[in-house]
Structures are given as structure tokens and as C-alpha cells.
Image 1 (cartoon, helix red, strand yellow):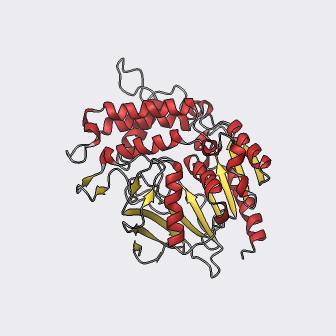
Image 2: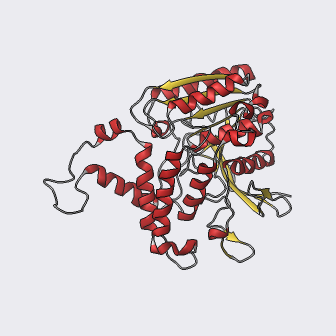
Image 3: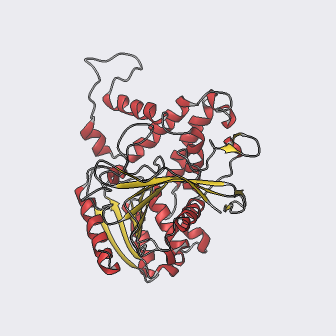
Length: 390
């Protein structure tokens, strides 16, 4: 029997019913990993917004990006800030909890309640650290599918996500097409490029070079590799932006009158990156960063299908797809979204595609981007009409 450790459903200030908690699967229901290892007992943390309707046809799974978590539209318990997709999920927004039952799951390997390297290993009573097995995007999705089933949902009205969340969407379509009515993939790619792997390796090396990393056993020793993790975040954050956005926002503006003639943060862009790094270490675990970036690097949807991306979508012909990209995204450029759409078309799937013109770079799906809102609103409205959702 599975066990859900959750608080009672509550209603927030907007009248939205929220729920969630940690769902614990017993040892006789392990998560089988692509590596051949298993995780048991498995714990999966999640958050819900809205109410599941009588025929269970209105469930939407929102998949988070690399540094996200389950708090998509509620105040984050660590930072006190609004959820990372509060501009999309909420009353009157594209994903309205008055219409949909929205589920967001912290990926395995994460650090906000789902089983990860900072969790306690029941065999040692110490944090897993580097004894935690390497996980993949497919493993993350398999854990989500176990949770969705445990919540009594047979078919998802939609699965939606951006960046790493978009990769999870693609994995869902490949592995569980019979459980999907529609799928929205935003600013993602069917595989991780050599350039992206290289950026991740810089971040991982920064963490592992920090003396306080201690071979991944820093929690046991009461320290944290904050400097290394901050540098990793700074390097990654540059890839989430675009040169025009950086120039528009910061240019070469100084922090103060005149130069320091030293190595303080003279330029505003330097100060911004340092702030991003410093604030990140308060809410994220360094080992989780290693594991999740490795999962992204291993992602190659065609790899399990003889290297032919079309074959990954052969069973998804009944799923309605929407693929969205951003014109200034150089992390996952539009050409990679077009590769996805061509494969979907070749597999006989129904797919709509739009490249959204913006200078905000990869992170545009987090930001105020009206064309993204219109695209999401239009797609969900059309799919809901076909589905017969009220």
C-alpha cells in the first residue's frame, strides 16, 4: 500500500484549492532506473492546484525545469517568493485551477522532498550523497507516472513544461502516449547538444573543486560547497539570457561612480550574476545540481529508438501536440524545436508550432511574454473543447 503524507487541502487568497505533500511508495514498489539500479522506498513530493472533476478528465501535469520544484504557483517555503509559473497558473490565466486539476512534481534527484542525494539512505541512516544512483529524464517521468496513477488519474488532459520540463513532456509522449490527451513542449530539444554538455561540465567542476564539497559528503561534515554552487549557477544563468537582453538591461553600466581598479563587481551585470549565485545556494542542493545536469546530458530521445526520432512518437498519434520556441533562445534554439515538429509530422501526429519573437532568451517562458500566454491559452481552449471539458 502506498502512503501519502500531505496536509489537508486548503484554499489560498485567490480562492484556489491547493494540496499535495509527499507520496511514499513502499519497498515492494521500487522505481526501476535505466542504469539498472532501483530506488526504494521511493518518495515523490508534489503540489496540486484546483480540483479533479468527476470523470477525472481535467488533470494537467506541469513539469519543472532544472532548478525548479513543485511550487509552481504557490509561495516558495524557502525563499518566500511566488511560484515559478504564477504568471501562467491561476484564476483567469492559461492554466486556470477553476477548470483544471494541476499537478506539479519535484523530480527525483531533486531537493524539495522527492528522493534525491540529500535524502537519508535507509541502509546507512546518512544522506545518500554520491551513493545515490545516476538518474535520467526517463526515470523522472517513470516516477511521475507512478504518482499520477496513485492519485487516481488514468489519463492526463495535458502535460506541459519548458526547458528540462519540455524534455519530460517529450519523454511522456514517447513512453506513455496512452495516458495523454495533449502535450505542450516549450523551449526544449530532443537531445542535449555538445555545447550544453560543456556548460554543465563547467558547473559540475566548479562544485567539485570547492573544498567544502568533500567528495559529495558535505552534509555529514556540516559544510556546503556554496562558492562552487554559486559559480555553477552564474555560468548557467548566462545561457538562460540573450545578448540583447543583457545589453538592454545592463549594458556597461557601473555599480558606482568610477572604477574600483580591482576585482569588486564594478559592472551591474557582475553584481546581478553574483546575486543570482548567492541566492541560489539558499534553496538548492549541490549534489542535486550534479545529478540533474547529468540527467539532462544523458537525454537523447531518439537513442532508445535506434537513433530515429520519428520512432519515438509512433505510438503518440492520438496525442495533440503544441511545440513553442523563442527566437533569441541560444540554449535550445528554434532549429531543435523544428526537429521535434518534423519528427511528429513524420510519425503522423497532430502538431502545432510557433516561434515566439522575443529578445528575452531561453528564460522567456518564466517572464511576461504575451505571445506565449496567447499560444497557451489558445491551445488549451481548443483541446478542452475537443475533450469536452466545461
